Image (cartoon, rainbow, N blue to C red; front, top):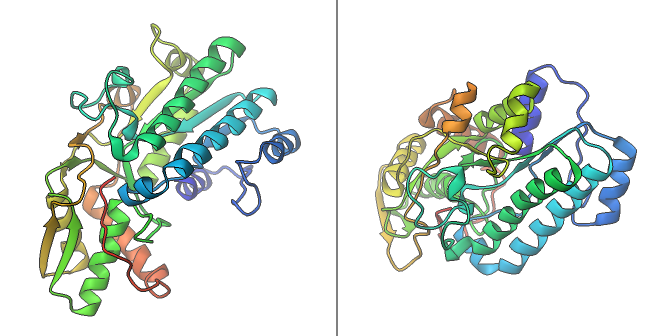
Length: 319
């Protein structure tokens, strides 16, 4: 998401970008974040940094997922307030909504029911970030907005099967199976959960669109009739994991069998976002799912496959 934001901003003609890699700035270190904001004094902040991963990673490192994300967002949001940032956009995930929320999921469904257990620590951290934005707005008069993208994929994704989300995991597994002449690819779960997918550059385009809203359209998003400062980002279309896996196989050119392992967790049964608030502002995605997958696979083939490590245990976890 971060690299997609930089691409979108550069394409739009912005040249005054302030960026840091993780090796240059550890956002979990409060003093380092304080010094960064004191030195750079940014006017607008996109908070895209996070500890993320699929079901396997979330289940293996729950303390990391809640702890690191809480530290990152607490440090950045607080220092953004202290340094007088004009607008901040905090990015989360559709997993913030209850496991069995009505579909499509509206912003007001937040905290209306139990979360999906497989990624609850991460979801709780992101919910805390939304609450922080809302609380700082009310107490300190800040102008912080939270945006919740659906499942994202695109160039620069992580293809480590232990940490990858479902799109990156499937692209790598299908590629390796095709290259190795394997007779099948095993995918976690039953294949029945439904998911919505959005190309990362489309999500970044939506974020830049939101940040550039004129004041009379930005301000109502921050506190409209007591609703949290929250906007969903998605494409309003979903499909089953089985259908999606078949599409990925077609894009990669894997012609053999797909096997679903029902002994592995499915995650939430469905996660389709209601994007009425965003579309009413005038934004919609530009890149189709297949076109986005072709771009992502080309990026994987050109930049990742040559140096990819031998396959780990096949996970293909659903976000």
